[in-house]
Length: 111
Length: 115
Image (tube, each protein chain N blue to C red):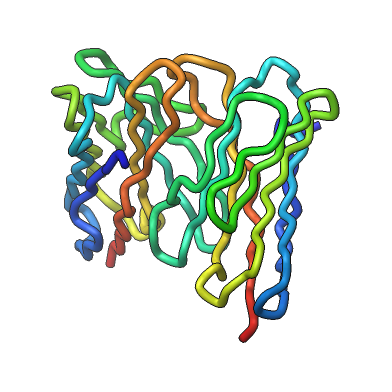
């Protein structure tokens, strides 16, 4: 079983829709969870960072972590065409250990 | 927010030459920097972990003599692709972490094309 599983999509939604992106992980020792957005030919941009179970909200974005189920989600409300990108989940244990990335989900928001 | 600057953003070189890519943390001191490689429509592949003042730790399958990493200061790491070949053409991305529980921040990547 891979450490992090993420459906690669592609996912296509109409403008204004609520988008749900998900990852599952296998190692319960992981404590820190991030979501990155990557536009084509650009480096990943940090969207959300959390380290506890529950929800964290930032504007139209909500990150949700369920450590008991080893499941993390990113919700995007009122999706916009500018949200079209690849979304990567990433997790790590602690300290300066490398992140473990999901494969990324390609999202297209259609106007 | 934390800013990581990577330069150049794009480089084209001839086969057999060497290319240096710089990664700087602009507003924080990076105890650790990571170098990734990314193929089209694929996820990030970790190449090496670099700590300031010490030798980089390379992932399995990554040639350390080909991909030279120097982390000379807490704000600068460089990746040199030596004797580049067309198969080295890729998107290289650096990232930096301040330490502890801080999140990882990425540079904007360097697209290398070897002709």
